[in-house]
Image (cartoon, rainbow, N blue to C red; front, side):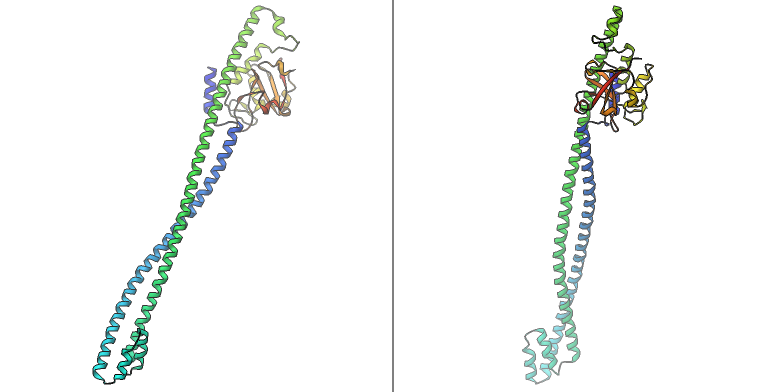
Length: 359
């Protein structure tokens, strides 16, 4: 029954752990999540830049289409003006005998040259010259605009390609970072599962030790050898049998979240857990680690028995010894009630001593 309670507790509180490797992975996951958020913002900016460049290219393509229509119209108008001018020249040829004027007209090397020559010919009206100039000017303007638009289209296509490449690059980074985040979350879940399995194994071993201890105590009572069961060989005080029961009580709360100042099944701090479990066997202890250090009698590390109080970190932390070199405690904020070993580096180096509650 006790193991079922322990398993349920760790299933409910499986994500709360103070294990250094889990905490390190969580810090890494938080850092990666920050990178994802930054990449998301960069991706949004890249999309906006790409959409803007694409819209610009579309506008240029539209202008090119319109300009091509204008260019075709200009060419058609020029063609009609040239036909009109040719007819005018035929009329000049058939109505005048001024061969020198005709030779001037027919000797033109280009349209501009022709216009200049036409201006010298008195037989061609100034109105014809003005129309011709307008047609040529419009065609030149449309042609220049066409060239400018072609250059703009080329530049805009290059810009669109750059924006697309930037968007793709950020998308790849975002995909890889998301995959890394998922991987780290998977590692965290694996570490927590391993840690919970270890806690369950420790609880199982502690339960077996506790059962053996109770059996030994029952046999000792039946033997009526009171002196032998009341003290150890070196004269240290043996724990009263009723106080070893606090171990089983404390084990019920494995997986309970740490709450600063907590002294109830809703949440414990270190001294609150010790005070609560001892209260269940009728012993009142103060809810303060320094005050608990003054209770009972001192016990050497070699004589520790289940139910003894073990102190660490300059009396800043307390736990309940459960045998086998292990103790149960509420470590700190973000953690849960768990079993730890006195040989763990963080606890062996900060171990202060132990006290045995005697009544």
